[in-house]
Structures are given as structure tokens and as C-alpha cells.
Image 1 (tube, one colour):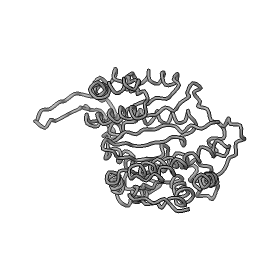
Image 2: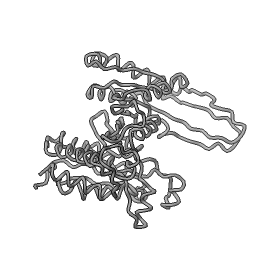
Image 3: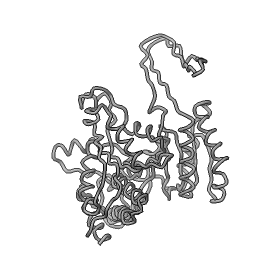
Image 4: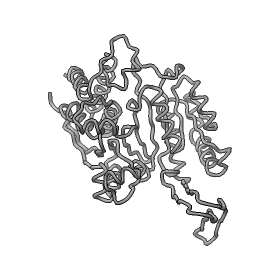
Length: 404
């Protein structure tokens, strides 16, 4: 069959370890045979980030702004052990954090649901979408290891020369400090992205922070959300019969567990990071979670919401077969290609993306799956554990039939 042509490049951000291996296998097995792939490639593997002093991450984010759509592989955020393992000159920041700061977007994550795998929370019947603010907070914080006794102060010097100063703590011995920040403009972008996504998908929107404890920081988030809702979205929500409400995050967690699903849960940066893993695991697997970063000016970055699967990578290096779940990475590619097709008016590309996702779900529902899903399988067909490559080839066979 003739390959589907692309008119605008997709920004391709390669990654690390086992997901890097899966990245190439996915391209070889289920994309390149069907799509005349046009990408602008950036290697965000840790080795190349070290070689470029992380400039490649900045370049990739700016390319995303130029072309509008990107697809990203999972990458390593180095800790002290990784610095030693990869002989790094410094502990480079999270590439996701760098990209999100440049794009100033919101990350929307939702589980991929299949028949035969029931959520751990028995009341959940529909997907729960996590909307994660993708700027600031702990991911852009300044930190200091306090060596001994002394005074820690919060100081702000205004452009007009005014000074605000408040004691954080009088240390009587060693400790640790962290200074976080966010911006009204980014919080407003986060709010508008969440409200618009709720309108587009016709889902209720929940927002939660801890404003009772954080009376300025978190309360600012709460206030900006409410102001934008009242001024710009209240009538739209009421016309659609959907609801927006704010609640404390501990109350939200209790409500989520008792819910049936089918709503958007907006969270601050760290909260969204943690809760998206909780939600995805409860629905089945970290590898069964879609993730897209949406910026206020209409840029999209699709990625897998999980890590680089280090344990499987070490097995792979020993020549052992692995059964690593590629679904999140597959859906990152399908999401990016669908959006590229929508923006460029290439219907065939969007149809291909739909067919790829259906073939993936059909493969699992037929009983063919990777090891992480076998223990949760409740379907009629017996579960057959396969390697990652075998799984992709099963998908390819279905895809060929669908596109014939």
C-alpha cells in the first residue's frame, strides 16, 4: 500500500534506556511501513544531553514551538547515582521540566481502558483525566543544604527598590531549604487550558490545592481559577450541564476514590505528578496512560507518562528477552500523528492514528499482552504473555488488515 505523506515535520524527541529501544521498534514495526514519516529529530538521551550541556533539550522545546506538535520518549532525570553511572559533569534538570517551562502548558493524562482489565477501584467506570500544571513549584525550585546554625530569610526586592523580608526559620543546626515560585500568568494559562479542555470534552472539572495551609501560594491558584471561571467560562459550563468546583486536595482524594470517574482533576505540578501515577496504576499500569502537554498558544507535546524502565534495560543489555509494555509510547505517537494530521488537513494520517490505537486495544482484548497486564487479566480469552517485539508484531498484523 502507498505510504501516507506528511507535509509538516513532527518534532521527534528520542530518550533513554528501554524506552529508547521500544521507540525504534515502534517506528520500524507499526509506523514506517504505513507512514512516510517526516520528523525533525532531537536526541534527548542522557549521553547527548551531557555532550550538548543540555542545549539539545532547549532546542527541542523551541522546535516544538516552531512546528506545533512533538512526540517525546521517556528520559532520565539524573540523581547522584546517575551522575556517577553516566560520568556527568552536573546533575542535569528534568528535560520534561525544561520543556514544560518553555512551552508553559498543562499536561493532560488519562488511562487507556480495555475490556478484561478492571480498575483496582471497583467504582471507577470511566477514565479520570489528570490535568497537571507544568510550570514552576518544586520543579524550578532553588535549594540549599543548611550546614549549621543560622537564620533563613525570604527576601523579595521589588523593581521600585522596595524590600520584603520575613524569617523562614532560625536554624539551631543543619537542615535544608527550598524556595518555590510560580507566576500569575502561568497559573492563568493553566486555568484556561483546564476550563477549555473541560468544555471541549464535556466533562466536569475538579481543582484541588491545600489553601488552608498555604494561605498565599495555594490560595492564589484557587483565586485565579475562580476569577477566570466566573468571567469567562461559567455560562459555557452551565450551557453544557457540566460543573466546576474547588476542594482541598485531601477531600479530592477521598472523592476520587468514591467516584465513578469520567471527569478532569486539575492539580498543581507535584500533585499532578504523583496523582497521575496513582490513577494510572489503579486503572491497570503506568504504561497504560496517555499524556499530552497543551500550551496556551496551541502547541502540543505527546509523551509516555512513565519512566525509562531501567530494570528491563539491564536485562536487555544482557541479551535477555523483555516483556515491556509499549502502549503509552504507542499512544504518544498516535496522538502526535493524529494532531499533525488534524492541523495539516491530512485525514489519512488521523485515520491511521485511530487504526493504530484500535489495533493496540484489540490485541490486548484478544488476550495477547505484556507481562505487566497478565496478572490483572479477567477477560474470556486466556492471557498470553509475549515479548515487546511480539506484541508490536501482533498489532502490526491487525493494522495491516484494518488499512488494507
